Length: 310
Image (cartoon, rainbow, N blue to C red; front, top):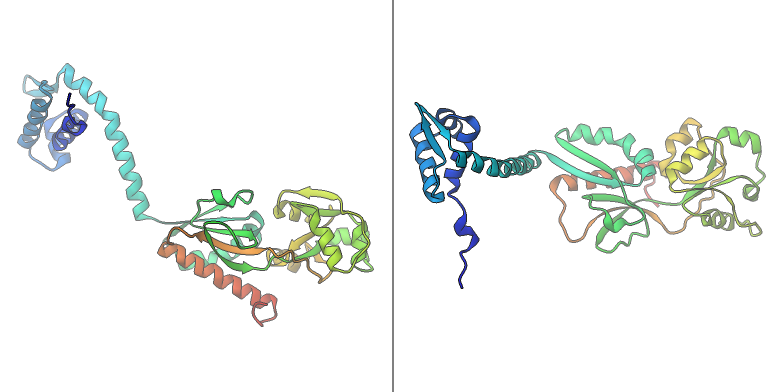
């Protein structure tokens, strides 16, 4: 047995739109004004819809055209569909008329490096809306941002990556902490001090080994989820932390933190700018990407005394 295709039950859309306007505005004249047609055209479209439905939707009460009981029930049934349609259309129009980029970043990178530089980018691109989110560093593959700044080896399945900044960490503490525990005779002195750990406790052991301290106990101390918490703990004088110099330059310049030794710990991880390999960047996202790379190169050149990245 053949069935009638669903689309054959679709009402004439122009007539349906006219009926919705009439039912909502309550008069033929108001509906005609909103739709930009004549009152007689409104009446014609209403008749077309009634013929399609084989049900009277309107009736005369004196000189006024009003909804029948069936017409009122039909309007209440289709009203939510028009609300959804207008809402969806508005969202598309809004997104088409705005320029938006979503950038996800690691918290300390965002606070210590990105935010202080943002005014220059926003001043150069006043019509662009920038959405900044935290990168899901535990599961980067769930990141749906246009661009993301990540910390690691630069290899993430399904993503392109460009190295931005080095990830080598240096030992720092607050001046108050150093006054209490200093002076320090050498790198080995740190092994006996309260140490702060970012994500895991293995990095301090690597730093001590790379600094030539061959005999030291397994480092212990407070463990924090990310660098932003570790930075706060170091500023509070809770211990020595290994932090990445490009992200704490303001703290070092102001004296809020003191770099204890030039020896850095490099575990092969750096900061990378990433985008999805299966999609193309918008023109605005390319502008942001180029700006981030330019700013990173400039900050490296400054850090290296004007000789460029190493």
